[in-house]
Image (cartoon, rainbow, N blue to C red; front, side, top):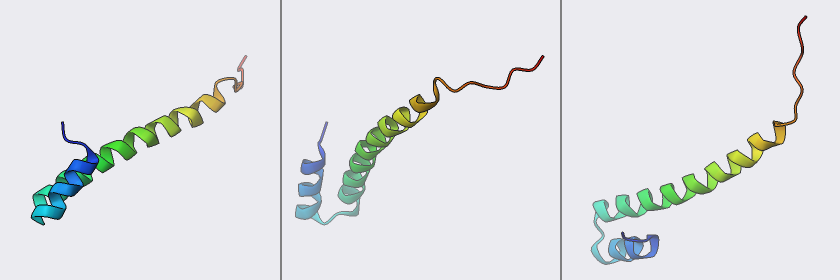
Length: 55
């Protein structure tokens, strides 16, 4: 699998739109994983939240 740096270097050498799109896809996937980890931390803040009890 090609990494972000290799994808960027391929784009610099070729100037191809396809190489740029490959670079952006790798970059977005990396950012998506980081964002997902951030979301998990936010959701964990409410694990002890008490809800209303109806009787």
